[in-house]
Image 1 (cartoon, rainbow, N blue to C red):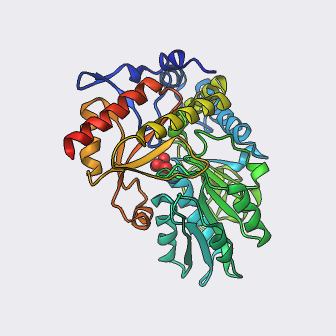
Image 2 (image 1 turned 45 degrees about the horizontal axis):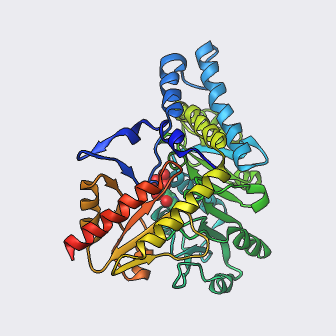
Length: 405
Ligand code: PLP
């Protein structure tokens, strides 16, 4: 059991009021809030440690470098990567996927090759592949979902052929909450010698991840969705793949020798980390992961699952409600619409009651198209949310629905 009141007291933003009402923050799938220790770590970096990393012999630079590299090792342990140099720091999930699309695409994809995606992918796992299509004549094959919002695994398996070069799949849907069977997907793809990129943006905040046990070839995520700072994320890649891929960006740090005649590149992970990294963010990122471990991921999961179950049951008592995504295994995310009430109207009026939810297409327009809608209202929970907040949320949805009907 976790002490939610004690956890909440560590999040200063949860003391805020919106329109005179206590903030009820249910937009955690977009970004989570930060415990005081993470905020303090950022302040500490600027107040006591700030210096550029990797380049200085002076104390500050060495301390900043040590903190930055310790985070790499922390992330390595957190997702159980074999080597710390398989952890590449990026700006987030989006940049990590762009990196793979660009570099893996350059090294391993040729005209006529095929990449398998799913219809529920976030735009950040669709558009980079479409950008690659401007350079290479590759084909995107798309796995559909069933009425519960689960992937059609039969069709997934049927999409493989001798031209399949990569599978890209989200671990959990930011819209439907569906937790995809990535272990099964990876195992099947590997029987065809096809590597798999897992978008872990919605997985890492809720699920324990072991990239070696999964045998994932690439696993990407953002710190800001797991109580960490914005501006930093991770590309995990198996050494053999990263070694085979050309650099993504050129600049400082990623080189071994530069001359106008010929430049050679640094080794992993620096080959993919051009320029000054977000070393203030990386230091606080480690603090966030330490914080999650101190609360306990399993205890968090139990609490979040209870919130999800309670909120789903209560929402279903509302006349005219439709919940999008009723998969057997879900992260604490609920997308819904009430009758023909527009999601923006619902979201704006909930805001007036102090409740922050997300509305719109959630960067998943192909999924919206498949569902035959333009958008949803989405409530997503984190460890600091309470059952009382859900009661207030349900009452507010009822009130707004009655007003707008
Ligand atoms: N993938 C999924 C499943 C997401 O939910 C998000 C963000 O909402 C992203 C990718 C993009 O993450 P970021 O904007 O942090 O790069």
